[in-house]
Length: 219
Ligand code: E4P
Image 1 (tube, helix red, strand yellow):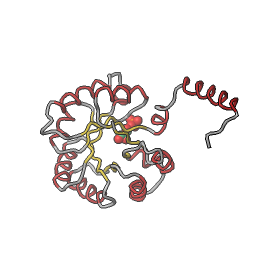
Image 2 (image 1 turned 60 degrees about the vertical axis):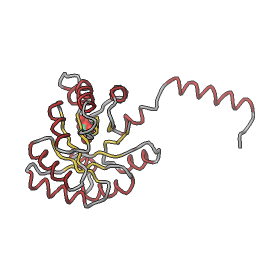
Image 3 (image 1 turned 45 degrees about the horizontal axis):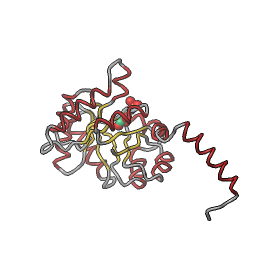
C-alpha cells in the first residue's frame, strides 16, 4: 500500500519524506490556504522534495477553465497529478487531461457510482473521502470496500487506483489496507501515529536500561 501525505506544509513534508516512507503528496485548496503560501510556488517546492505524485487541485468549476488550469499545473513539474472535483465538468476535464498523458486525481468522491465514472474518464486516482462520510453518520470504509471490489472485477480495463482520503485515524489505514486499497493519503499526525504503541515504548525503555547495565558498546 502506498502512503501519500495530505498537507501543503513544507516542513512536515520535508521531515516525513526523510523517512523514506512517503510515496506522494496530496493538497487541496483548504490545505493551501492553511499554508499561507503561493499555490504554484508551494507545489513546485513539494515536487522538488517528493519524487512521487503531487496532487494539485484546479480552482475553476467549468470544463474549459479547469482544462487550462490543469495544463498550467502539469507544467510545474513532471510529478504533478492534477486534481479535479467529481463533477460532470471535472470528469470531462479528466478525460481530456488523461488523453494528453497528464495523470488526474478525481477528488470529492462519495459514492461507488462516482468512482466508476472517474475510472471510465481515465483517472489515475479516485479519492473517496471516508472521514467526511463518517461525519454524517455513514460508514466511510464501506465505500472503500465497494470501490475496491468493483475495480478488481475489471483488471484488464480499470487501472485507476483507489486513494483513500479524509483519513482520520490509524484504524482507517488498517481497514483500507485489509481491503486492498492502493493508496491512503494521511495527515502527518496520522502517519506518525501509525508507528506508536505503548508496549513499544515500555519495551524499549527496559532494553535501554538493561543494555546500560551491561556497560558494553557496539561501536
Ligand atoms: C484528499 O485529497 C483531501 O485533501 C483530504 O483527504 C480531505 O480530508 P478532510 O476531510 O480531513 O479535509
